[in-house]
Length: 288
Image (cartoon, rainbow, N blue to C red; front, side):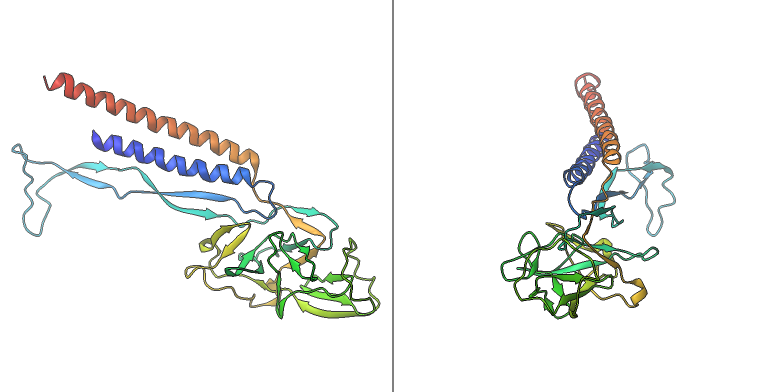
């Protein structure tokens, strides 16, 4: 009977973790390029129940358990296996802002692509392409971390810049050095285009093992593998300037799952109450 209480309590704890994940998804539903999390459960190993003799002693001869007949199996509930991040691409949102970039992964490519940003903890991966221009002309995140190119942090020393679909950053050599904000993404407006750098786009071998750090940053782990370029140019994503990727959170889906979690939590709570009542009757009535 105590096992039933433990199983019910474990089920309630598991559903509480699942509720926390859903709440986090809903809280970030409007965040640029946010990727929803899914809670994955696994069952505890089932135990075989063997019948004891009338004296309460189970006979288990050396090297064999066959003389104790199997009565059945006993499950001990579930446990959290992992919190899995789903990297399905979000919808395309047009902003016409020069500093907004989007990674448009090609169909059939399973591994997602990431921008590389230099933080105070080292290089981090991100899908969020919402960047701004700091006072020194560097492209940075809203937190002030510079966007990385193949040559290092990207400093736009001209008034206008363009990002081609393959990630190359072009500047107009005929314009002065004062950086200023522009909302035009027309590739034909440059009279003397010069290649400044190329965006540092990376992927990992096992994206599901990336470590979420907040602010849309991901850190690589030994399980995910180190960030690496795409082995073939055909797999590289298309870079869209003036666009942003929305989150892949579906609010209706999350609300339906929240209702399901509430019902599962209540079912486990009622099971615990029933076991508690039966245990009380066993102690107070049957024992007398």
